[in-house]
Length: 354
Image (cartoon, rainbow, N blue to C red; front, side):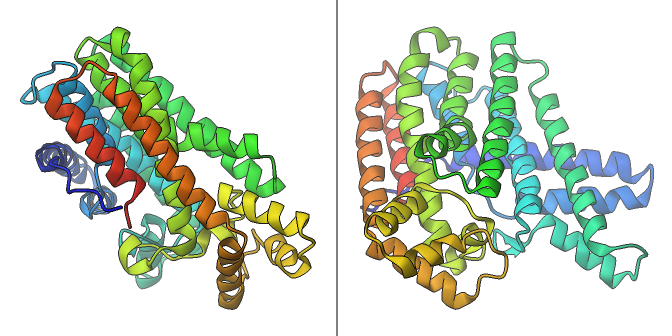
């Protein structure tokens, strides 16, 4: 199923303008303190402005408009920019934790810093330096996210803080599960809820409704919609991590296998291999999490995910979640134009190719 193109370009333009203004001003301010700081701010600014779907700010914006907020209210651009700045923090740190080489068709922040270290013939171990610098730049994005919402109503800032905690909890459980090769499906679903469903969809919706003053009557319905769509969003991410085209996704395929992520795809394939006594498939699945996975093994794992029916089952689950989410959306008292855009965003999130 192909989604229509959502009409949230004004959201992207407003959020990008706010982010760019903030970072240009800060780069000028701190670059005047020392030119080395200019380099760091330039890296962060280039990362933020190099693509990005801005889906989270869009969910936030249309919930705000749907709840009766004024689309021209400058606060919604600040709130969207805060959500995107938090996302930047998460991506920069996630790339360090995963050892990823590319993001959005360009080197990740730590790889860019590593290249700068090598080209400049600086002292010290390049990897430690580059990862440390990337962590600092990610932390800087986190600080700016907080500053962007500092003057908002207490209900909004409390929600934003809770979203930050939930993101960390989800990431923690994800890393722990990969290291322990935790095969529990309930744990995998908990990771999906906290690492993605809440952070990517439910909480941005809540933030928009709270800014419009209608979280009380819309919160539960937005949760039903947002958690379903958010889970579909993560399941699509898992499918793209295994089968996506790097030319479209902007990052290597197979990294999830090398990181040992215990996705629903993996859970279903492992159960199929174990229950059917398929030794070769089971042995291949046991290789998940090994950084030296050969290209042939990556391809073999893809074949197992297809042969086991795991991919088809996950695609069916995505369809089911979107159907459930859209049904919940239909019960909400939202401005019609916003409801239509949120439905379009749900489809785009679930059936995207990047």
